[in-house]
Length: 174
Image 1 (cartoon, helix red, strand yellow):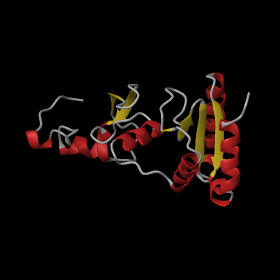
Image 2: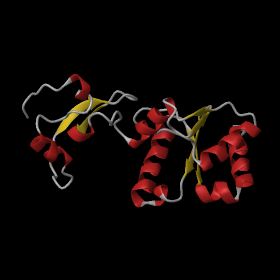
Image 3: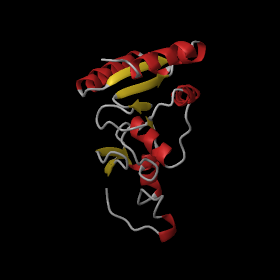
Image 4: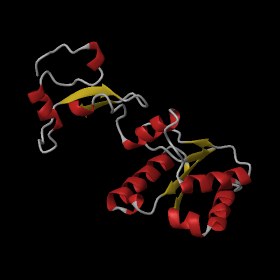
């Protein structure tokens, strides 16, 4: 907890005043690692960050991290996102990718007022993943968005049905 000066060459990586303090920061078994407050570079939310990650962590959540990586050329679309994008291109849809809907979700694609998600079978099938998706869907609908979610196996094994659902939703007459 004491202040310290570090050499100019180490200023981006030094987080501790001594080797013994550094050992505490690096000890993963220690349940109460020291934290600092940082501001997310994507959404501006304040968050707690472990001291040992102070130079590498710049975002508050996985969603913001995906956006950060995408903006900085470190993000690569998943195979199922590429499949959805090729469908959108084939129907000449005017879409945006990975748009932050602050505090609610980061849809893979937005076309008008329709949010499209390409959900991987593994992570989105966990109970907390399913609940998170339901909560996002409800909030998006309350905000006036339509929501289309496609499972990885749907995209991979029935792309024509996926295209049909997207087309019917986008060109639906109300």
